[in-house]
Length: 149
Length: 149
Image (tube, rainbow over all chains, first blue to last red; front, side, top):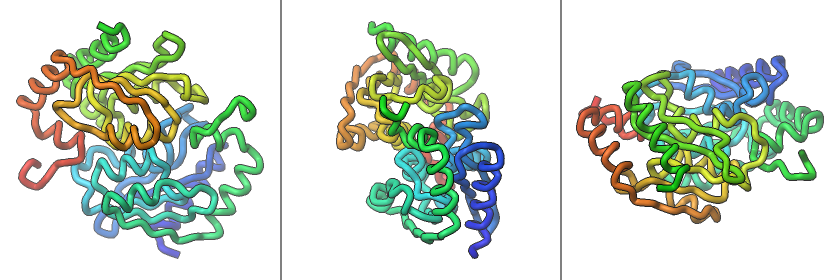
């Protein structure tokens, strides 16, 4: 497997160990990982630290993003896709989009190249997690309803 | 002035005092402020803590957003607009959009009501800041180029 996606999956697995939502992300420049992170909703009580946002936060103030590639175990949602478009990241590689279709078309409409690796391991992490903690997942994607609260 | 926009401006002014980019935001539910924040790029070295994201982080895990209104002294960029769309916030009130047009059309296309108050105080805060620290501003909106670095 792509070493960078393997690193993103390791982040997702770390998040799962911590009791969190198993989504991981790494930011790559010139063949090197310059940031990594995973969803921190549970661990840090943060609604905004999706895996990709945590990764971008951990990468710090790198200035320009046009030579970076963002890896995520799951297709980015609008929050994370918004960061991609605003920061000028040109390429996104997602582990899967079966669990969640995300905002692929929005990114592509803004000239971002999006690749979906459609990996069983990424799907399995989410499938198992959502079966166990559906309300956490709906909270994370902003789809909590009175019936789900 | 609208008390909530006044609170967002107070956040922007607090950010300026801290040496940061003067953009502030509050989240309102049922006529009460449930989160407030300001841009933290300089203060916390964070590229992702735009005012609106800092505000949403500080509001914590509130679950549902469909009954909230997000105020920002500046029209939200794609990152912050992405959060609005993903979380299901239905109304955004911006202090101005002269400095930066932001992602108004994107939010409106997703059913968000967007109001631009076009306030001179908000414009002045940004105008003065950008004249003094243009590179910080371009970094914040992802438009740093080799000439600007």
